[in-house]
Length: 523
Picture 1 (tube, rainbow, N blue to C red):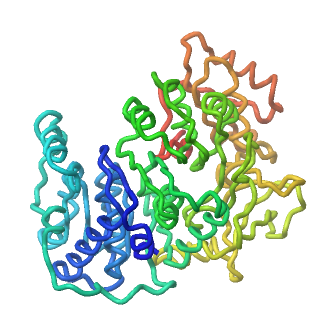
Picture 2 (picture 1 turned 180 degrees about the vertical axis):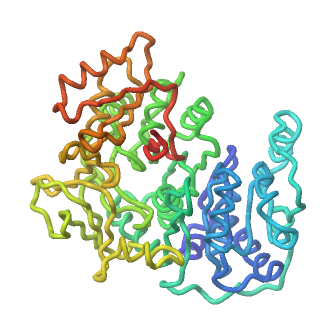
Picture 3 (picture 1 turned 90 degrees about the vertical axis):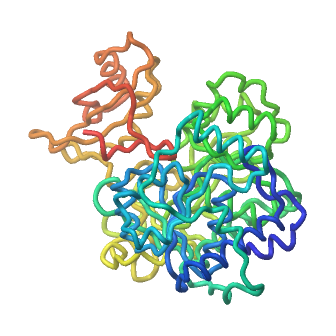
């Protein structure tokens, strides 16, 4: 897919990073060089795993496609993870090589021995950028910000790897559809993480499904998509990088989306046709100075995922930009996209839409029987994008994939009469109070509607009388907010068994890299 895209769209702009743009034909050349390096210098065997600890940028694109071109497997690792978490993931995937941004290389100090360190490539933030931009970034990183902690080992440099020259010719025979392409970790901040095994068939199927959803009219004219979400997360990887390479668009990669002022400047400069985001990002952008100066005249598509989009955020976004957020649903184990609202939707629906082509979705009760329309149950998914299983973990695989290929997602939802899927919560997060089910998302939505509340999270805690009780964590935006006011608001809007027994105010809530609240670490 990548080779065909680079040949078909050779002279089109492919990627931009730090305001530098590179064409498809040039990115293909870098990919070929890096692929040859992995084969001829590291002498990695076919299907060996290569961990990428990289933020968005040109080096990520080259490393990702270079690994696949060499017949190897990408293992995406969040570079912001702790050294302990990184060590667990590297061990779980049994990686043969690592590509890491030099700012995070120190995290490998106590993870690698001297022999393993010989198969590590260190990437500088300015790599693949032209001089003097490259030199300016390197100088700022090393001397002005002092943002590169010293590492114990000496590694190959990315620029050095790309400068190597090897005999011409194809790197290796093409991968087969059912070969593993990607090991993608899901969860795992405590204990051993699960690692979804995604094949070339899984990923290419999901790209084809997304393209069918987009429609040929939308895909036929090259435009620009802006990607502020991390490519090491499956949502941005498939829905942005892979899909928009396949249709030949220009992808503007944002390295640091937390720099909201910088993101606004990038939006003003690029005026994208499409934008990928999550609820927390949309909410933060709306409150960022100069957001109202962005020209949205080219914007046609805004895709929201990763976590539920709040109706109030969707309404503010549409009012500010004139474009509705199109919400979808997916999970790592499904490559990830399963459902999406219609591409031409003009208003926020509150649902996650319809299944993608070639995708089956059913709602099952606790006995595994198909539930009636409108009944709440677990979401089951079947389609070509569903993973092969969890890497080297048949026991966990058997728990989530049925003998006839259904993926038990662990998400709870229901179908509307129009057969649109509405998600309610995670099955494991449902709170059982005196035998009654309490969905944390319902409690949280009610509390967020209270003036003075910035964020809220509800979890279940043990209770001698009712088995479990609801505990609520609140991030107040006003010093005048009181626990009594929160409880009074809940009693007016919720049944008695859903009303929180405990309320705790906090300055922040723990979030994952996409801004989803990590309920499991709250207590």
